[in-house]
Image 1 (cartoon, helix red, strand yellow):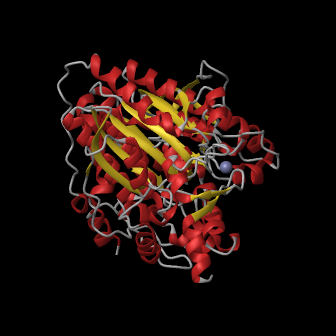
Image 2 (cartoon, helix red, strand yellow; image 1 turned 180 degrees about the vertical axis):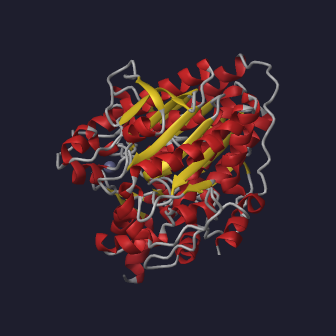
Image 3 (spheres, protein in one colour; image 1 turned 135 degrees about the vertical axis):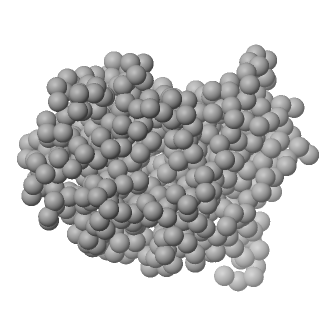
Amino acid sequence: MTAAAGQAEQLWSRCAGCASLLYRKRLRRNLDVCPECGEHTRLGAPERLRQLVDPGSLCLLPDRLPEADPIDFVDVLPYPHRLSAARVSTGLAEAVLCATATIGGHPAALAVMDFRFLGGSLGCAVGELITRTAERALDDRVPLILVTASGGARMQEGALSLMQMATVSQAIAALREAGLLTVSVLTDPTYGGVAASFATNTDLVLAESGARMGFAGPRVIRQVTGRALPEGFQTADFLLRHGQVDMVVQRRSLRGRLAALLAAAGTGRPARPPVPRQEPAPHHERLAGAAPAADGTQPAVRDAWETVRTARHPGRPTTLDYLDSVFDGFVELHGDRLSGDCPAIVGGVARLAGRHVMVIGHQKGHTTADLVARNFGMASPAGHRKALRLMRLAARLGLPVVTLVDTPGADPGISAEEQGQAAAIAENILTLTVLPTPVLAVITGEGGSGGALALAVADRVLMLQHAVYSVISPEGCAAILWPDRSAAPQAARALRLTAPDLCRLGVVDEIVPEPATAAHDDPAETARRLRAALLANLLPLLDVPPAMLVRLRRQRFRRFGATRTGIRAVAR
Ligand SMILES: [Zn+2]
């Protein structure tokens, strides 16, 4: 490019909506909305904050955290190189900018995501910074406003990025309990783990004009279903039509709308005492002895990709198999009371060594016909809502909850998005963080992304020896970060998705050893071991008062963002 052309480039820009050539200063004066066609261009976090808050009221919160590459992730580039490049190109420390400010004279805490920074991906630092902002809102007793722009979880941080969905959600739950308003403003684009947590489990959800939000992205849904997507799929107007957002707001009206909502929230604020805040538990102390299996042996190391294949073996015991072999007297309960009964989630009351429990799990199958009938264990929003109904019922009845996780992920379909998949997952995650009854989760096969986490925010998380638990499938990760999907075996290794890896990272508390070769070779022995592990972990939880359980569970999920240097030290 010549110097003159470069200068012209800086002065003018072409609208992506109508292709008009626009004078940049004029565009900026119009809040980066095309004056010709109304196209809302994407905003960086600093400009977004400038547009939203009262002049002179902005006070940025600290944005520096210890350097993190918690799983030493390398694809074609080492993760720290990608981070440095993002810092140079955006001038930001991370993909979120946090602040306190006033809007229309009303104080609030704000966390604003920036899509330019690694696609606004949710990693440990982003989760930690948003959580601290929520805690600041709680301390100051002011509303929290989250402006989202994200492609999803940051896969370079593996399952730890998935945990951030729970960490931020429980901070939002604390604000909900304290009677403080939470608002999310969806901007374009908001997808994946961010959509399925704090973008949709706030009190109010506003969508900026032109924003798209969903759990699965349009490209993935097209690939999986082979179907053309409906006109305007996942756009703000689509979301409004399907009951998923409170309102669609033009950028120029956003500040006024927020000011009005903050004013309304300020009038009837209940004078409840603030909820005591959890200090993160020192992570490395918990991790030191975390890796061995229940019987004290060190599980044999097997290649991550081989483990993925074992976890997907069609002969592997399913939730219904375990309900038959590990539990007694299972009575299945059906339906979400809203729209249907999802066959990919089974749940109901059962007995474990004579005690009643609520068991909820993903159901796959052993034959192609079974798998198809059960949608391969991929829950629909109705499935997540059925699980939510059963969790709440368990808490009311004083029953502990046992979840069995075995899913490639949530359903990547058109109707799942229409029915509010992201919000359904988000509500389950938030509810589990505050459920006043013991929750014990077992990853029995595949623990796939947000769909798995929707059943896995628990007091204790167990994992069968050859199960996997990951923020994204190795194939999906390879398709994004490597030249093609054939790099799935490398991606599987880089993601640290095996039970020993996740134990070291503190995501999983205990490994349940499988019989020689794997669970599918000896289902009866697998069931015996699982039953012993369930009892050993459940019985101590039964004596803990519910309020204490919730407090400890929050500490468990709070620590994933805070002490990443500790994780790194132990992971090596
Ligand atoms: Zn235009």
